[in-house]
Image (cartoon, rainbow, N blue to C red; front, side):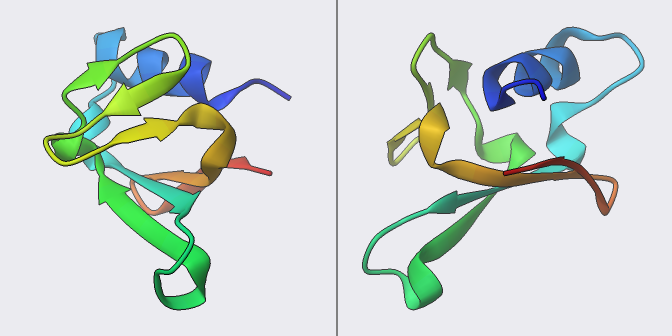
Length: 76
């Protein structure tokens, strides 16, 4: 199994992919069902340990699902 950082980098940099078509599901304590979903177009930076949006820095270890074009491409 590969890790979410590698998958997100492939979506961002591969010429046939588009991170904007991704949905990133992650654990967010206090949210309904402890889950939040980020659209790929909200990702502004992919760091070493976390990714950034305009409102948050989310550690990769909290990601449990990534969908691309409504297909699951990562599941923990």
